[in-house]
Length: 434
Image: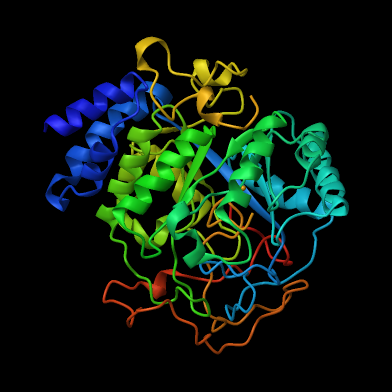
């Protein structure tokens, strides 16, 4: 179709599609979804070949968060039966990271619940970064600690952090419906602080929270303007005990269209499939690799992912290859660094694209998923914790009564059977899934 041909041409030139074109991708029918995947796949292969970058999450501090993010199992008042523990020591975090690196991960994402780090927290995380890097040559480390105060991004950079994650999650217009304890502007400010400190910015979104197509396009265009190197796309898991427990709005085809739209708008950026892929993409996960060039290996922060070996087999069977530590993820024009490196060349320069779009920025952790802190995973505490779980506590098993305004009972598409609370790995005595 003409739309897809136009979008492929623009993606190969790193040119920003129009909003109408982005919306049209989301409006395509299920009958056309393979055509959409094939078109966006051409753009993905132009900038990233057939490489898939593997990332591994280490939840440094789980639960007991004072923020009220509606999607989050670690939120204030959450009744989800997740693991709860305080800060892992550097050697504990390093051991947890080693499992993911042994499984093929190239980047370790260090995440902690909370509004934002204290200076003591930054010191703790700095010690952890150094421990991981001392023991694993060439590893990338991304921190995801919440809202940053002045000077904290610089301290993390000095400690060896390569990237910082803080997701926008949803559009500015609807942000207040999802979270009230901080603002959309707070999130933008933290991404800009990471950029200004020389950290690779990682910022993404959560789909499936009841948002409109316009909201999805708004947040992706806002991300393009912020110019992160990595965009995690999370798919909400409506876990019991949170206000969004009834929001089962996604189909595998819808998820593929969302990923394709993100790829067309952000053609040369690392697009990562983050929390919720197993629950919502299900058997169509291999198709998503034609759109995204990055995934998380194994488990998430509070929920279990599919087996690490299954991830590796999926990548191989789909005809892709794991990106190794010696390869540069980003295309040369982005990886070179510096204020002109993210800017489309020549007449491809578009409004809202490239380094000039940083606005007041210089040259993510309550996030919805993946490296973006509180990934949308976890369910009600109906799953008993195994014996030997270290420092693990479970919340009550009664579901919170809060519901999103107008929410109805869970749809027939609800797949709560695919959601399992993480009971292994960081914060427990059990081996991780990697």
